[in-house]
Amino acid sequence: MILHYSFVERYRSDGRKSTSAQSIDKWPAAVEAFRLPTVFGKAMLRKIAVLVRSVLLYAVIAVVMASTIGLTWLRWESHQPRDDWFDARRGKIEGVTVENSLTADGQLSAFVTLISSSGLAISFRIIRHSTDGPLPVLLVLGGHRTGSNAVQLFGNVGRRAVVALDYPYDGPDKVKGLVSTVKTVPLARQAFLDTPPAVSLVVDWLLEEPWVDSEQLIIVGASLGVPFAATAAARDNRIKGALLIHGAADNRLWLETQVARRIDVKLMHRPLGTILYWLAYGPALNTAERVAQISPRPVLIIGARNDERTRAGQTELLYAAALEPKLLRWTGGQHIQPGRDDVIRELLRIADEELPF
Image (cartoon, rainbow, N blue to C red; front, side, top):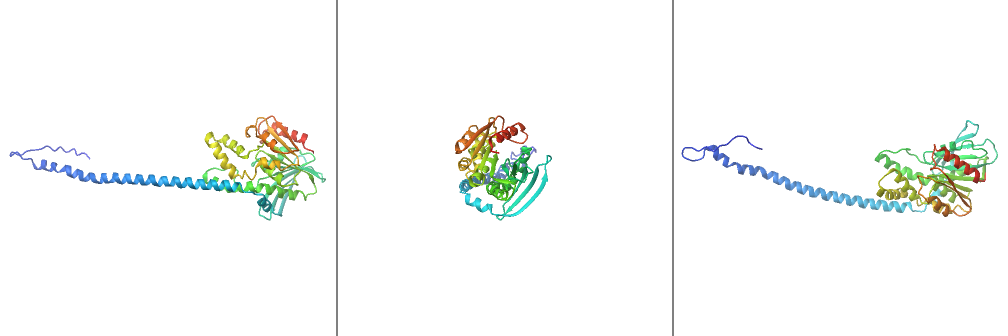
């Protein structure tokens, strides 16, 4: 603080300082006394800064250790064998609801929900020819948003039946925010594990229907559905063949490619892809291993020449992993998805040419 009062030394006639001047001589000591708390405060601030740095360091160490332990556990847990769990989770059908209807062109349609004794629930949609005789059946696993609506992509199914599954996922389709993401992760993980036994539960129901030809039951996996279709076919011999569309041999690499499509930072692609691979039970749904177990039943693999979602060479590796009998075909366009009618028409044409019905 600056005092603007002008203190001028005044001398009395005897040459001594005036009283005002004597008062000024005492100010330096007073000012120094006021400075002591400030010096003391700086020392305290330094100590607090050191303490904060120490706390932050220990917090970072704790976070790193917790992350390391968590990721180590996640890796271990994702690699555990699941076949016995799949069998137990399948259970037996305890509840069935069926909603029948007709399509615009007269095909029979139904929306079915099954409840298992294990608590597993699965819904699916059927479109089929109106005949009561045995029909070949295509059991379809597509994208998670397409789900049972995949039956609509087939148009008039002719003298066959198409059955498309909704994934057994009980959560939001779109996730926004950290809290919502954290809540959704366990639901999504459960859905990944539930899908193979859910497929077998659907097969249980289908084989009780008089319109199903049990010798011509083919599973179709497209995109995300490929690992689940390969796993279900490998585990369930009642499925007589598999059609795998626009999939990859390496689940981790496929997930890494999906990360790269959304995040530009290359350093993040592999770590995030690996974590997603563990979260999604990629090792338990190992597509390359499962597709080899389908033999001696036939496998038809269809790749896309300009697939933006599957790394180059993955279709060939998937074909190499499969055992005979097997066949590889290609579509000329991009990855399958609703709205790409030319791709869907080409896939249907190939299916008509190669499937035995």
